[in-house]
Image (cartoon, rainbow, N blue to C red; front, side, top):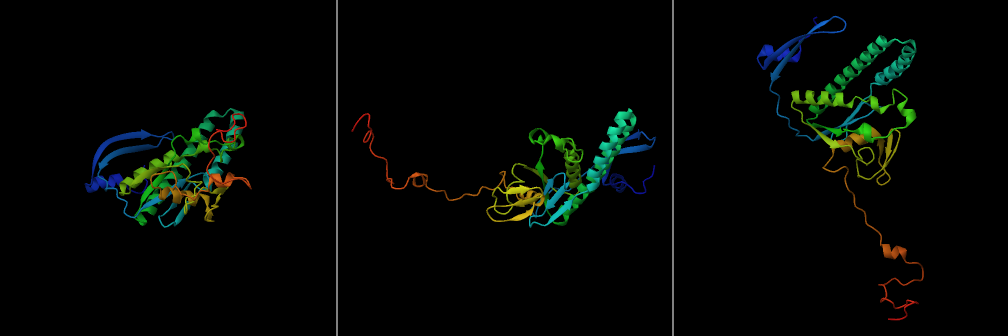
Length: 275
């Protein structure tokens, strides 16, 4: 089968820039034969000279990237959520009819769509980082399905269920595409990236897709705010902002009372008397 274009690995082998490995023939379910060729090549040294591009992954927007200056880019691809809703309804009808093979083929079709979308997003994320001379910083989402809670009605909706996220596949594609062009990739803790303000570091309020900071008054898109926090991660979950505390003793003294050091022990104890 000829796709009309030469793969990058084959081009590198023909140019002598890569060393060829094993060759395997593989036949798909549709009877199409593919030649799987492995190659070994050197990749550029990964260096981030212009800072980091923070990438936030979610469901409403599959990925949101922000440069160190705050310039954002959104990847939505609502076709994925639409396909999941459509396939979920179709899968219920097929289950009642006992069409198991058709259900399996439907699942493979949906998986191919998600992989294709992740290929598109990962390629554009890496290009976005290359154009700005930055590295890529991702959230550490390992174990999020066990730690993050979601309502039962949300889990029943195929387009809203967090268990259907394909963040691992997207992360894998970003990592290997970035290595081919010498873009470094690192991870930052996901704690408080969506709740803290990207300007002052205070814990703010998130209402659906909007974020509001009660301290500095910043308002903006919640996913954009999270991506900026990921990109400016400095070794802690969020920047610590100290505030001047109030005097506990002064605030607790009632009107007319003495605001001074405590008296000597037993000075006014009605049971033990005076000292």
